Amino acid sequence: MKYGLIGEKLGHSFSKPIHEKIGGYEYELRELEKADLASFMKQKSFLGINVTIPYKSAVMPYLDYIEPTAEKIGAVNTVVNRDGKLYGYNTDFGGMRMLILKQGFDYRDKKVLILGSGGTSKTASAVAQSLGAASTVTVSRKGDVNYENVYALHGDADYIINTTPVGMYPDNFSSPVDLTLFSKLKGVTDVVYNPLRTRLCLEAEEKGIACSCGLYMLVSQAVLACECFTGETLEKEKLTDEILIEIKAQKQNVVLIGMPGSGKSTIGKLIGEKTGREFIDTDEMIVEKYGEISKIFAEKGESYFRTAEEEAVKKASQKSGAVIATGGGAVLKAENIRALKQNGVIFFLNRPLSDIVPTDDRPLSSNYEALKKRFEERYSLYLSSADYEIHIDGNAENAAAEITEKMK
Image 1 (cartoon, rainbow, N blue to C red):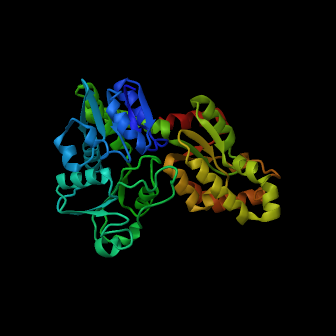
Image 2 (cartoon, rainbow, N blue to C red):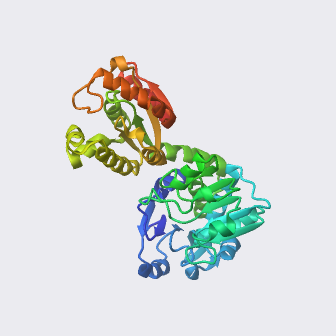
Image 3 (cartoon, rainbow, N blue to C red):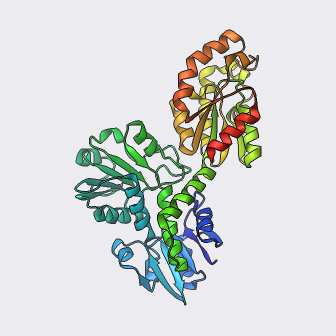
């Protein structure tokens, strides 16, 4: 390959579309077993590569030159082949620094906790020190500071940087620490970018703590890596912002919530047809696995159905770039909304009750009185869960066009 990414598991990676937009070159994802790393590096059959978990330190013995920052950190994530000699760089350092400065975090004289002990952890420590942190503390499973004693020892931390893969696809619903046990926390930076908003970041937002995930860092370090590959000087911040917006718009899900009969499936399918996005209906997922919804309610009850619905919502929410139509009661569980927010922009389809026709296949809204009661129970949840409210005037095409425009 000419350019690409090596790592052990790359199914979660966004690097290919990012690099191809930045540099206009073909970019390959190459998964390598540990036993194959040495032969790959010795063959040198590439012009430039990025390196990710778990090889950021392992590639260093094969390099002819390592930039001072990367050598000091002990991790390389960018390698360039120049006339058969391999040059190593750490563009993660610049990317992470740009992200933290973009967040507006002031590390001067502050305590920074770094979760994880791998190559990215070393980069995070170097970045924090470069920004004037009073102290950096590494938290690892087997270290002196671990995930059991960190709260007692460092519950007064000012900032957290997560460099672990905890919360990364497909383990979307995990968080490495309990943020409620930190009394002074001002901000969180999570280097995970898939999902777009990790469980850690969503929990931070719910507590009013500023947080960003790693997509900005991924794009900015890719811009820096492209400079290494091509030798060109790029407008780094401008290009990072442009690519970020474009990639985020492609990867975000369109999530539709609202009453049964509000048009979620019809409008969702139209959006999918217009944009080429996959359409997913969580009710259809439930029917496919468990049978008709009315029968589930009749034979096993609402609680059983809600558990099946949560399972379907979580599975759908792990997709990226899809259109997801949810059941009318999906908003009843906060966990469903957290899952949908990880990769999604949520639209409340607010259709007047007078335009919704009750049907027998909707167990909780089979007549107008039941429908009205459900609407009154859920209306505030629809509003609080949504990023946008879309008033439905009876024209599904108009609604689909409005949502598509907002996603841009």
